[in-house]
Length: 574
Image (cartoon, rainbow, N blue to C red; front, side, top):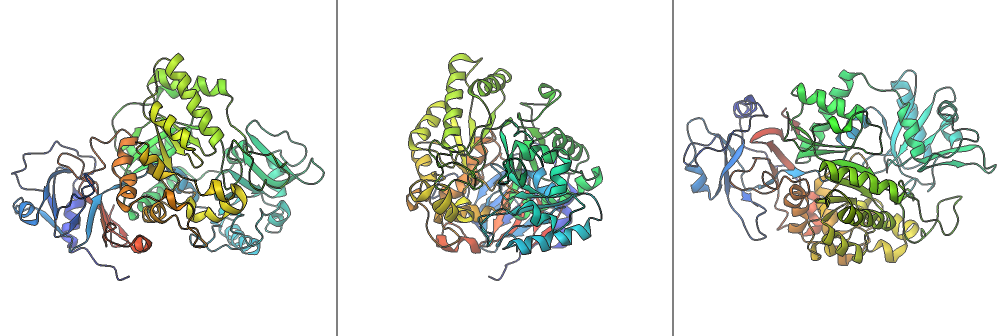
């Protein structure tokens, strides 16, 4: 599809970029001249399924008017900048309902082992070749790769430690599974981490073993992977900041104006805080400190505070189980096909005991922290529901607007319980594309797979569901999320659970107004209304008039943060 350009001069872009992004004055009277007007477009304010406008005006980083071209043109002054939308579509800036922006940054220095359409690795030989290129690029120390997927490798299995030894026997090699919940290590890496011979499985993790039951075969799961990452080499502060800048460019190119760091470590918080104070954040970033990690003084973080240089601590994150595609998620019924070495009744495993989880949630309640919990399997979802119910009765206070991240196998009865307990689901909608066939054939079986990410039922239950990419698990491609939510197409072209499809407008709600609601920012984001931040995305087509199968042809033409262009025509403007 030919890409249509925004009619905006270089001088106009530079003028818009001159004002600091952090400035957020209250809107002046609508009669005063606007700083910026956007005219001649299809404006979708997201305030109602049938509400439309032609133009929008911005002053001081906030929306001062939404209306017809004539109404908005009347707000032009001598210094007003003009963007001619030329028929393109204007929407609220997309909000990342769940992702890991520091994880995206960290992944930039690793070998990309992703299968198509994200990367190019389709078999173990291709994986080895990519790692050999990485080994030459990084002269010594660890060789790291990310994004390999046993579901998409031609061999339909994880590589072995011996196959990674073929890349290098002298240097440690570690490759991270696409889910982020498993990895494969070569012999040297297993030796360095003390996991090669007879190591005890850590609590909440598994070291897979060879036929002797003692020697590690290379695959490590969950907490065993965390041990590996804890000892991995780190980029310099300057390198880490440069990677974070690039990660923001990737987010902006996908129309995102608010990012999430959905499992912030102490190291990640230091990076974000340093970037914020250096004025290096062009997006708003919501950090969620991971309660599974060791924090020296968690209660000293600035919870429940407004953004400071585009950074705020939005709540806390808990990991209650693992990955369905990696078959470590905690289910109430066994996996359709258990992973190698597991019994037929294997159903995954939890990360917390009931008592430990109640303690964590009670702590969050006492501090008035919003809770975001990773819960993929329905057993983990039920543990979360039960613990939140317990806190409502026995804790300091009921938890408010808790988030069930992924909630992929949520049952109908669980959605009703979420509504009763003020729990909102955030679904990994593009799972239907990336792993839908795998779920149907290996993970869940046809019946349960059809019900994965039950967005239709969530809307019907009166919830405010959102959708997310879980970047870097998959790229932060919001257009693919919208397409997946409306079509539920798998890689093979199957439709996984057609009854759970939502409309294009509902999918847009999931990345705008509902996403703002889940993070308690509905007063300032998520819709195009007077007084709200001018966080905007311009698309080259209208997602509400295109056939849903063509939604993947949409492109982000530009992204604006508080009225300032941060991405346009394929180029970062920070």
